[in-house]
Figure (cartoon, rainbow, N blue to C red):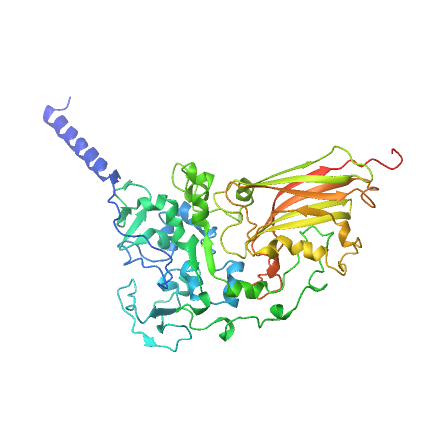
Length: 496
């Protein structure tokens, strides 16, 4: 048996070791609340102002966050935010219109800007590294003078990261989080920012109105060296020609023709996004949800950093419901076939939302095997009345339509689609619209062997009207995410 003093000493040492280990273990602490403003896009500012880099953050690159935030980094890397600069739609649009305003959201850090610009009536901004730039005066083509200088801290690799981690998570020397508590062993300053959990946090880049981008002071050189005011090949076309509307009515893709003048209309119109305003009137907002509820779904560990949207078919299916029914169970020669189509937007904003180059497409296709018996499309877009009547003009061209693929039915034989009559045909959040496709049962339809009605809903990253224009990214077909196929019963002439 050991002497009592030795036992007590051993116990004391053990207790000390356990105590030290417990003291060294991470514990949850309450974080201080961030008192500053978390700003993003500002029409008077070229880039966001994030302040100094926090101690312990080795780089502005997302790679610096990956060692501790491996899951979030892997999700971000596959997200639309990570592709905000490299994405083909942006690349094509920016090549046609290299606007500094576009970079303000797609690559918003000063280190992502190859050139720095500031207004003369504003003091030159200071880089987050703490060094000022000596600006030199430049000749201005805009209404107000400005200063430009090559950015000595420009990082091309960082620019390719688009909306990177620090864009949202770093301000004024601290890392922001949406959680009020954290481990006391975090290797950098950490601050609780409640605004990160609110829909308004996303509005910085998804809600803006630049009324006259052509004359903005951050636009020292307009696209092509001069204003795009109707000088392009597309705009010089007058009226509608058969060549413009040579679409394949038998093809799988919706037969929506391009529209002359769309490119120039887009270049001259204001740059507008009203996604936050749309959300405020949505059923989702009334239920107390936020943008993050859908686009950053929470798990036990963290919020998702995928930001699913138009790039995610499942997200599109959740947003838009489709229901189709026929007005009769059976049709005979001479009857009028009517299909009632209901579209409902269950999303938290318009479908589609964002930039005006996006579009939704409803394709109503009546066919018998490989034969097209009738077809109409409805384009959901804010590109004015042209969106509503684009396909109708194509297939009801006054001199008849020359269609590729050998389909020779007269234009009047393609059916009729009743659609909403308004300039902005996008679906409001919570809105349900009813469209009616009708066609007389005659000719090939009356003799059809296995007729079916196919109704499909697509999301087009770029409006079909821009096809062949300078901002056409030449993508594949639009994203199909909803489809209903209904067999038709046609009584044969013998039965009658």
